[in-house]
Length: 304
Image (cartoon, rainbow, N blue to C red; front, side, top):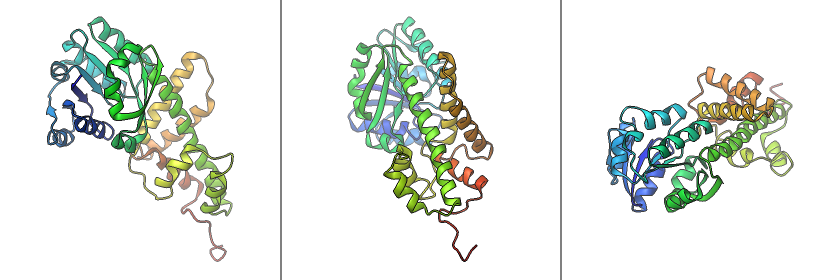
């Protein structure tokens, strides 16, 4: 399997596509962002104008798109992938979308003679650039085996979440529910400490080595909150979307998730404030403003 298509070469997709080119794969690319496509063409990729054209030139097509509707349009739309599928064509959807949509897409693609797995990722832009993503796969093991070498170029950890398309998405939503809630919980606690007169250094030192420690604190705070750097990253809009999908999944299986529902409301407030395209950690600044905390250091005695 050397001829691949890649549809969706944005912040995550572009570095993933570059790694495939470096690994020697022949790549046909498609995206609404002409500049991103041109950059990949300059490195050896071939440009396509429509999804069906990508499918016609490749053995497998990877999609990395923002949401369910985008993937459905690429597959089912005019000149979509479905109209060009032949026997044994493979679709690898690496987007994070509604697991029920993934299941329906897989059924339609299978009926047309092709195969599909869902393979969402975790690891952010840094993981995409370095080829160290965690990739969560839903679909038959035999289909995963067909593209295992391709996925290994983009990620260093492959997890087979289940034999049905959509299972990868389900475990990704579980992960993002925790991450989204953790960012808000950590922000609430730290803002309380700062407002109470503690220094950020003291809070980080204590919490970072105690029971309140989180992945968000160890990996996200140092690069975003503490540097006041909230360019994506993983956009707040996408975290809002993913928690919404997680809430729908929880509702479908009958699990009450009140904390996740409240967390989504906080992210919605951030979107209303125009922060949706910033890294999701910008929710810290939004919450700090509401709390009346305007700096990371506590007020001095003189200021009081």
